[in-house]
Image 1 (cartoon, rainbow, N blue to C red):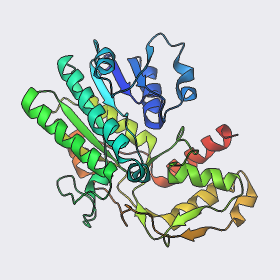
Image 2 (cartoon, rainbow, N blue to C red):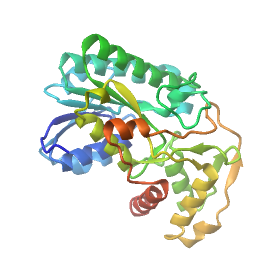
Image 3 (cartoon, rainbow, N blue to C red):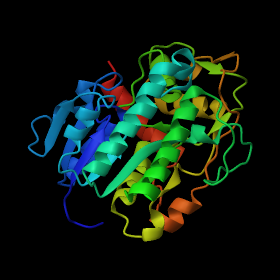
Image 4 (cartoon, rainbow, N blue to C red):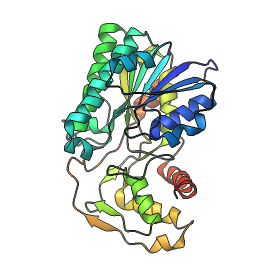
Length: 326
């Protein structure tokens, strides 16, 4: 990678993915501006950076255009992670999900265009594939969205494409596939499956799998996602910009396999976990049965080489939770 340093805005920088990006780019010597309203992010995720002279925290909301304009001042690159995630949340409250994920996204695009940032990299989503049954998922073949959340993430891609064509701002969308790892919050009504199951196992509670356990996902460790963000930011390949990429490992794991992996790794710290039974419940509305990414496009255009399989990632994540969850 180039040894030059940049000023990088990370929206949603106090969240799971955002705070990991802040940590990584600060360690590389870059200036990092974190914009977050702490709706889902946490101050403790970024507390270690507050004394770093290269780190700036801006508490604010992407639904305010003025805040977005303030955040992008003299910024070279935007890594836009701020969003309201969760399919169930979007089904319960589609209006707020749309306000943040569409109106907020548009504010960030407009502010980035006006500030003439070098490139706008944004968190897209595998939910964009919708009801498409094709496996593996290839970037140019999508189905119809299955939730308000999925609609918002698809609209993001459409806006980014139009802004690239109309205004000349470089954009890259990263379709995240079931990202997991350190700092992912196990608490709250919309906790992701891996931290939720980890917390339940650690509390000697039985996790509930939605469905029969045969649904599968392309679980993607956080360090693979960090690599993709850096590659998207620094690529000098003109054919690599103004498009979207699957951001995944390129393998799929059933929920039953996932639970066994978690139990095996957690039992190394607490042997009682090996005997905890799993409960199977009904399928969840808006869920697709299977998800598996083709990562060929990212490999060929960006030089992406994911370093962590799910087995390696789970080992790292479980160790982090055991040392940090109290």
